[in-house]
Image (tube, rainbow, N blue to C red; front, side):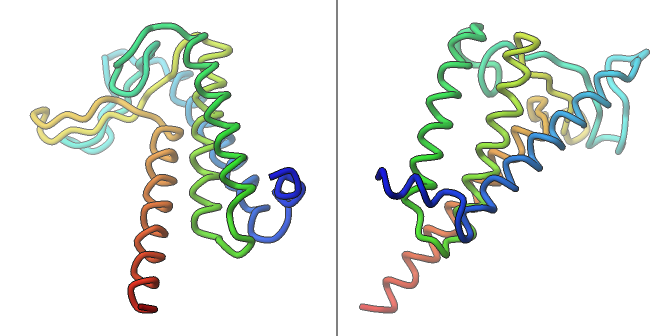
Length: 168
């Protein structure tokens, strides 16, 4: 493991840092823009019956579940980031998709970590619904990046599984 840590900036692993940085920058930029808006109504309709901009604070975890303790989530996120670095160190040098997946997860985690650290809660602004019936909880770019990163890793795991099946 010690030798692997030296290699977390080499080959495709450098894209982990690029993906993470881009996600953090885009997440914080969009939060800055949308929370600077003065909304005269509870929401700004972008696409009628589907997509609104809202301003919501979430002191808990995903879907507002869990304790409302910023310190708890700050500590959990830092531990999670160490796990992501460990996974990056153990990734094969040519594993681009999982490295990008880990990077987008890390970027999303850092984006929400910054909110918790500086504001005490995560700022959500994307509100998706279908005619106000089927309503998804508000989220942000960091949340979307985490989901996209997990999807990338799942896709890669199926590709590896499919490849190992052909080799048998």
